[in-house]
Image 1 (cartoon, helix red, strand yellow):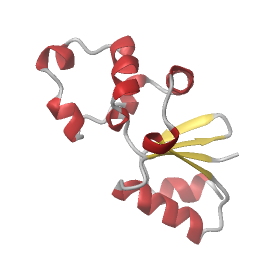
Image 2 (cartoon, helix red, strand yellow):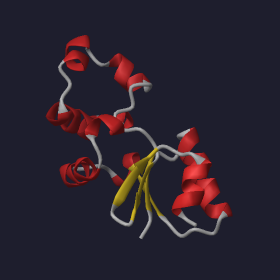
Image 3 (tube, helix red, strand yellow):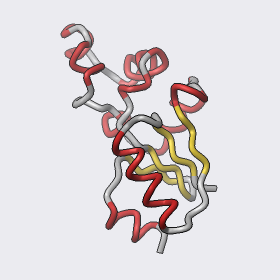
Length: 114
């Protein structure tokens, strides 16, 4: 099963879902704000990919973090903060064949679903 994780009002997520629909790819969409996020999901993500690749440093949420948190950010801190502020996760997160991919690049998706 292909699962897309993100937030429905994120432009990149919208673009990804549109691409999947246009290419007739079945998927399940998990909206962090609607469906939530929990420790089990975050642990699964960090088992499949380095936590630093999941961190959205361009987000308003990240920029608003206290400097002391940013300077001392490690995997455990990331996991705890993401539970409260899921917009710190780069979007979309694609789970396919027990492999995690972050972000959307049309060429990459064409290769993955070919």
